[in-house]
Image (cartoon, rainbow, N blue to C red; front, side, top):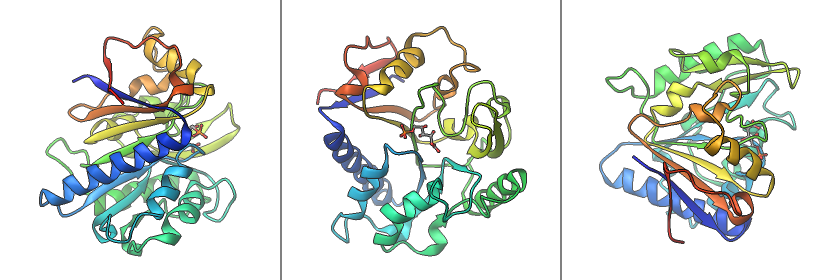
Length: 256
Ligand code: 6PG
């Protein structure tokens, strides 16, 4: 299946497109008698505006009682820390929508011992998410960002998490940052129904060039690990992020 690229004129129209794209996906899934929609949220700065726009939707647009949220990754900090991805989502989304606390599957004690935090997160996900015959959970949608070093989630170049083939979530030491992260693993992400990279700004061009055109080397370019087994891969970008980049054969550009 080809990956889909949708290009919006600027960061605000990208956030609006991503909001409408996500609302449509949630509504379609819930209308098809699926009991819930499971969404893995990205951290970083790009998705912040998307989360604000989701929070501003008219109340009945999304049935939040049937949406379960998890995190693609988390920094090894307390949930109230300025660097916390949980805190960023809380401030921009959770505090503004009627989502039951039980639907928020955030990393337990993210600032504690990282291996324990990852184990507790995996236990939580295994308890709460239906898993398919493949043994992987059926996450409906995973939102991802892309770092300048072509990392995604907290799958950083030359780190141990890249080689994980059975765990759903792991602790990952990132020497280049001098810190620990907790991250979903590539095989879990690849089992999702939809995976969408959110890409905004000129700084994404170089990373996209490597992701799309560098020789396959996921150790150096971890985002190359992301190719959903049966799901659809999306690149939701603004013009600045893709500019004059050539599209690989595997990516088709949607008409805007
Ligand atoms: C994190 C993210 C990380 C992020 C990319 C892009 O915890 O920082 O999960 O993978 O998505 O680094 O970050 P920006 O959106 O800030 O460019």
